[in-house]
Image (cartoon, rainbow over all chains, first blue to last red; front, side, top):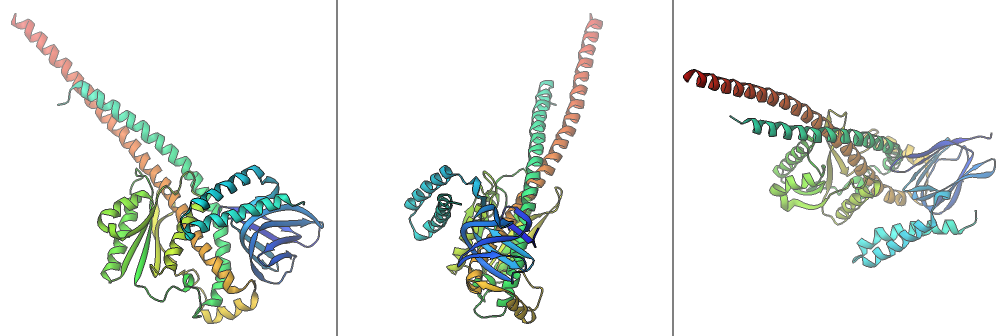
Length: 136
Length: 296
């Protein structure tokens, strides 16, 4: 096995993943970035998209994150995700239902401040749908 | 002197109360375990967040352009007291001690001539403060742990607090909650949320250059901090709520255990009394019969 580093994925509710990884591609707000062992220290915000964990140059795991932060040090990558679901567990019907619900909520909201949280969630749900529509 | 029938009814009613309290104790025990697990599961995120914020915050320390959530408004005129209690009673002094702490704090602040605003999480705290400080309560949240105490609920509260802060409604925010120590003991805790006093460890002067040198930021430090700080606020609220929830279940379990034991004692006493009364009555009837027979 090639060089590895510690990869941790945490959501507010629990520690989702803590393992050694060879390479991880993180969807940063300003573009994807790949993390290899010995990466220079780096911090970035994360957009709603897929994190890919590589092993032997192949994608081992694909995890959807709904935005958050990533912190990189030479020996560790920590992703603080608002929400994280393995891609294979995304359920198209459930996502579409919640999009409909959110669109209705946005329609019902009276003010900009009331709308904002729904719109943020809608963006995340739409990102999920976009991930499902994309070939691996 | 209660009649035999009264005593019998009384024993029956205490016994059914005991059944209820012992069931509640078991329910609280099960919920406690879950609440404790949830509190533990949330710890890694909060720790990582603190580490990240520590390095970011250090580079901003002492700078005039530091964001308000980190540095405060520079004043301390208006305080926001966030009181986190339970929605339900029957958990010993859990709610009462929180409310007492809040009253103390409010009284002290008012005595210093500060303005106070209150945000209540949980029905019990709101009801307790409404009479005395009703006009200061600006908002309240109830049923945050239904169906399950999750991050979205904490996030909603944090968002409200951020909004109020952005609108200049207060300068300092403090949350009062019960920190979970064990099922028997909970510690009433005050934690300042805004300005965030998380990293007093290093002096800004020596920490700042080090932290700045280490990290590269994308997009910029300011942008990251803008997102990170509200998130941190939500995490701190979430953590307080989780601790509070575990404490509540612990307190309820203890209270219900005591209640069950008390009910047991009471049943014992009532039963003794019932038997004495019954015997006394039999004796009395016997005497009546005998003296009646003698009179003939």
